[in-house]
Image (cartoon, rainbow, N blue to C red; front, top):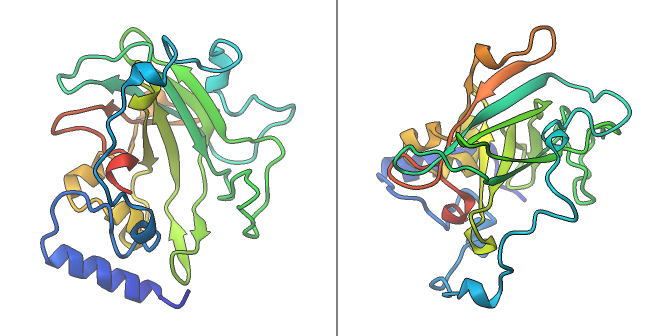
Length: 244
């Protein structure tokens, strides 16, 4: 790993100047996308040959407490408590009810509970960083968590990811699973992050960023962020299947 941030930033700028449109699956500044991106046409699958009659959400029903990532252990997690809420909508703005929404994230220090995450930041024994919920009749979801920290990754020398939360949504079958990332407003790492910058359309990038919403705050407990997820259409949220 010898590329510097200046090298990556120059590549990002060059692709921007060239007027790149659409999402690049092989975005050179995002080094691993060159090996990981699809090189063949999607393989058609008949869902009935690989599916159950309906999605199975686990060994038991989705408990409302699973949407609160701060109460999963005996102690209190470290970090700034936040509420993240919004609605899941279709391209006509209609709510998508009964949708399984899953989230996972780093802790406040920017570290995941994963054996491959070994950078020198502390683990929080009171924070696992995963939750789920079902959308309501109006398509709404709501999570209580801690604000994740940025973290280093090995795309290039001194590479840092902006703070983000991963979102996964299931449709009526597992082959409809969609995965994306939600970011926080005003993050100074946006210009330096090749994953975020792999979306060339500034308006599409903006749709990946939540908005601070004072109405979602809980007095003396947590601040609030609002983020709607649009599944299709021109104003859709971009998903990782389109990025890498």
